[in-house]
Length: 217
Image (cartoon, helix red, strand yellow):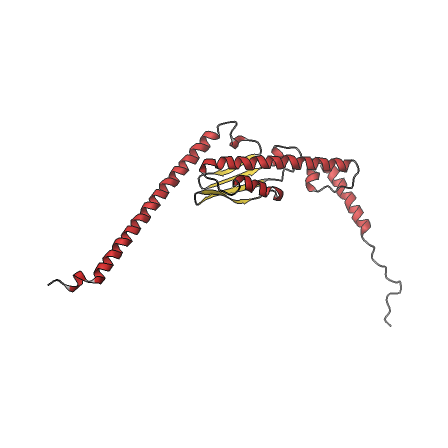
């Protein structure tokens, strides 16, 4: 007669659960291994691409205004400095864009793109309603670069026309960017002195106290 425990339903169920757990464990390990291999290949691909492109004069990496701060298979960060491509934009104006690779796609993680250009940039980068993969991520960055170049030219023209109106005598307020772009330090000091004088004239004088002082009744 066989032992009861050798053929019990509990024993059979437990063994089956062990086999399932072992299968799930091996499947998880296999997926992790495959993922790591894919990521390692992506890492090598991005390094190889960067090393090849950085040597090319016509590469996006060497275009005026754009500078890549980070470029790898997980994150891409770059800046755009308008004053390097146009004349009349403050040197303090610099835009930053950070891209992150998540769920097999590239996303714009954060940016300092001008508010009036955010939607055009997003529409171009996301191709309307889809995401970018490794195959076309550089095309997406190129679209951002082209749109920021358009902003730079548009803003430069705006600043120049504004200063022309100021020089022709129109009542135009020059902000700190206008001052930096068009005026010398001496002209800036003179302009600020005039503004302070105008403000002082606009301030109402303090009421004079009666010579005898105030009397309570």
